[in-house]
Amino acid sequence: MAEKLTSEKDLTLALNSGSSSLKFGVYYRGATDEEALLTGSADGIGRSTGSLHIRSSTGETLVQRESILESQSNALATISEVIQDHIHNAPVAVGHRIVHGGPKLLAHQRITPMVLHELRSATHFAPLHIPQSLSLIASVQAIFSHAEQFACFDDAFHQTMPEVAAHLPIPQRYFDAGIRRYGFHGLSYESLVHHFGTQLPERAIFAHLGNGASLCALRNGRSIDTSMGLTPTGGILMSTRTGDLDPGVLLYLLRNENLRADEFENLINHESGLFALSSGESDLKALESRVRSGDPKATLALDVFAVSVRKTIGAYTALLGGVDLLVFTGGIGEHSNYVRSAATDGLGFLGLTEEKIQIVPAQEEKQIARHCRAMLAQSR
Image (tube, rainbow, N blue to C red; front, top):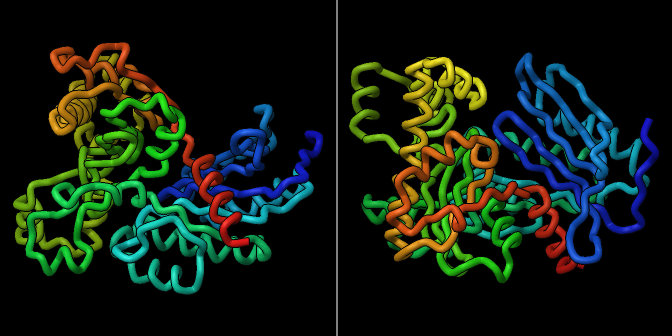
């Protein structure tokens, strides 16, 4: 067993909850920034292919299990055991990535009974994510009862968008009820802004490409438009999500297929995107392997995806009046040269040279820890 890790400083546990995954990090405040003691992830939660990997700050593997994890709470229980075994101190703060705060929770904040009430009321804005977040918050309360909990909302970063970007072309009463463009991947985009600091140019486009995928146009480090909309299903197509879809398609399915709401939700979130175009595959490595073997369906899937990214880059370049920096992040954005090359092919006329394109890993857990540290200081 590895030597125990210690820290005399307040520790923060950052939890990055996805629809079937849980990434985490345990952080302490270093000389200039948050420093990780432990990091890890549980993937494929609820599936036979589930796995859990936990590493020390030096990269040493502390836990590596290939087994079914029934829930995020189940994964959290194992994480708490590792914290107890390898770190003397328990976390004093736990920060949660929460995808959607609904129309009333618009800023990162301490979790209170009022916040929990509003989250429950906002479940229909992100039905794949919010119930799991609520369950995880309850599990944290049971396991780390002395820790303060904080909500870090993935849509908070996009509150700077002007009304022309946020207002959907539907009757005002729906906008008043919270039906608007919110945007997501905000913690990822915030981490990129922090990464570049004063070196971030005026006009930037960030592309977070993973199982969920979106792009964001930034002016002076502030979001002015983003591809996702009311929910994380909108925007460009994704691994299993449709992205934006002609409303006529939805009406056709409702009228001719008699789909119930839950069936329709499953179709647009789990059976579409790359999965649908390739006839059953959403994993990028597997798709790229099929492309190299000459598979036309896999080629179509990746090309449609890349073109949707390219079109959004072009639109945001027009919106910004030019582009000084394009950043790819997320699992696909960081690791798929095929997608990056296809997405930027032919964009030289925009002045988008190789020198303006960078690959930067997302640091959502560290960004959560930064927010928690600041909010913890304010609450004391």
